[in-house]
Length: 410
Image (cartoon, rainbow, N blue to C red; front, side, top):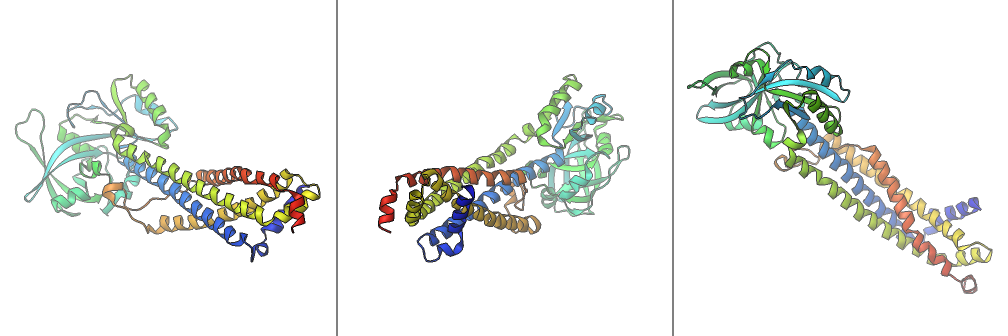
């Protein structure tokens, strides 16, 4: 019985069956609408997730996922901690931790000509994820800072460089205030590179230099640092690792996550999940309505066939299964076309960055793409299941068709 049902549904599905029939344009509309819906949904998922992950990666590349700092810091450079804490080796051994590194910060005022700019200089050493940060470098080369060697090289943001009207290779003069001194400290730096993260809170405030140099400016002893930053393999591990850090540090230090330091930006990005679900819901409803319409047209067009099958002893459920199989072929064909078009467009965007964004609004210049295959597969399975469930309603209409009447007037 199953093979017969399959055979009949395939015969109805064949392209030649639709030529010249009422169902022909309805079939094409259904395939087109589902394919377009799938294109929109797949693109929404891949770009929405891509934007979220790109911004999260940019934040983590600069300041890590978790920061460990002294309690009750009254200013950017007033508090310090030793750089040989016992918890470092324990945290490093955690398989969820990619790296942990110390950093030092100080507040400076950079003067160039008649221009002044207040900048927080972040000092880093050899454990800083330099290769990851290099993706932000737009001009020059990221210096290889060492823990025990002073270095007068500095990395400015494009925002700071533009305001000071300076370029790579130029020299700048920075002024620092230290507690206990009446006059400011002056230090010259050589601009080694210019970076751009597109995150306003970072680009407008920070510069990168040597940890040893910043420690010397702060008047610290050997090994004193402002804190530690932890980079994880997966952002989902933040709660677990943060809890471990609290336990290992015996609650002596302040532990903050990127979700706290950049809460506004990350909450805004998370709102894209709502947009994605709204798009999926609307597109799924449109696809289901189109398939119900096609199903009803097919049933009305094949009324005589239904009457003959019912006369031969086929049940309403059996005949309904034939039309459900036929609808399944239409849905699968539309999914193949829709996924192919969507993945092609996403591949073009991923490699060439055709569509660009306003970095001041979205914190990225190019629409990022993340091929989340699990979500794509789940989307396709969901479209099939929802549409097939919705088609059970028009399939029930078959039981209302009287075989005697349909055969008589054929």
